[in-house]
Image 1 (tube, rainbow, N blue to C red):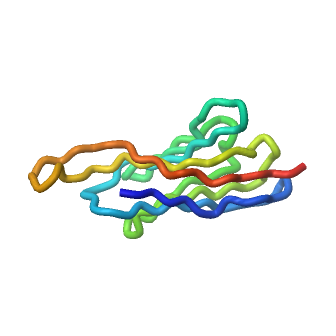
Image 2 (image 1 turned 45 degrees about the horizontal axis):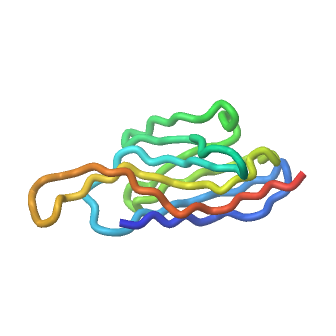
Length: 124
């Protein structure tokens, strides 16, 4: 299973970017998907999550500016980022709670998988 994130880059303050993260590999289902970020010298923090039922949760710092969504047919999660601020500069990571069969058995197991991250830089 792999998660590959796209869409990072350099943008001016008040600009917009859209990140996407696609899950590939042999899976049974995907539960909650999310975006996290880590700025230099800081801990990784939650940005937004979305459940399989499309319930969303946002960090206070991005609420009203960012929108998380998912396309279950494409196993992809998106993060639309508007009104970007220099404080949004960070490496953005996607993750997903993925259910897979255990080996060749009928047993299912859920694990959390992470993408490698994509850099978002917001200039003032």
